[in-house]
Image (cartoon, rainbow, N blue to C red):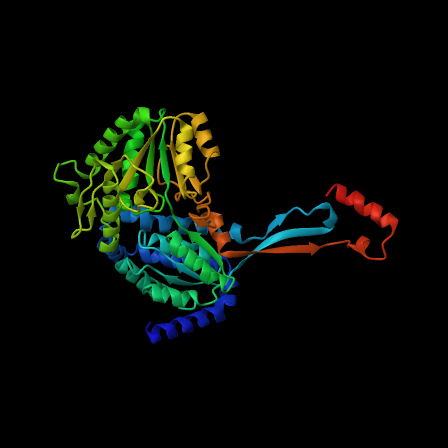
Length: 473
């Protein structure tokens, strides 16, 4: 790696380390002012148009999706955090047990210090800036390493950050994995990583060398169950949208369908209809739709093509789509059936518009399919039966669950967002996002009294009193 970059990383890291205590002492108004710099920058029409252009060049992302899945989410979190921050920063008083009579106990939220955010390419602006919002809210200095794959958006982020923040507050380093490795060698106080479980393990190993805490937002195979009581037309339409938005390159996208056999044919037909309505209503072809994104690069295009070919070679049947154009990085919405466990697509996160479809007769079969795999980031359940819904929730484990819709898990800041084991460690959004970037400092304040009963020499009377006290503890 370029020695100049190594020296620059070292220089910025030292500056942020030296200034972190000052930033930690910032009050609510000062932190809100930092956050509003981002909001103000995005409200500038020229800056916004430049971001639209960057996202289009990277992912062919239409303006509606750029707003709904990137810019709008960032600005909504800024608004939410600014309203809640005063309350979050206050000490939280908690009860004290009987042996601590005469004390008051509280939790104080202090910044972790200098934090590293490593962000992915699929929602390159959203997944860089939303963690930044919570890191700033908690009073940290921040270094961002955006993805080298979404180059246009990464360059935009670097320009935006350098325009509105001092390098002691927030800095950005672009570059490949070597830059990330150089950053991971530094003793950050916290690392927030979004990406694959494989890279997440590398990040965690690097963090362990400095005993650095981590938040890992990973992914995995999120299953989508549709039972016999579901509104098939509505849920098929929702599933078609959820699997196609951003060309399926979403960590909470449904990764495979598990359909009750009695509604299988109807669902497939309604899914086909929805795809045609969304992207081919005039019959000119999905590839010509201005609303259909593209695979990020040729490497990921080839990965999807390999998954598809492997499945076909092992007996999968194409129910919809199956079209690939490498020059355009185009992969059509695709449904695959007759799946087997030997197929790579049943063991890897798809991260594209290929959707395996499985059928089940009894709901216990659906549960067994899910249990064969690591715990998912999201479990989707489509059902109008409260008994079935309760059964599927109780018999499975997932980072989150969405019922009768898709893609909502990242939308409510009052709910924690994150995975379980292979699908992630730690939670984010809302207060949990603030807390993830904070040290929860326990404070016990003695107002009166003491623990003099525990001072030696001990007597039988003291023993009797202590036994009585701890009976009620």
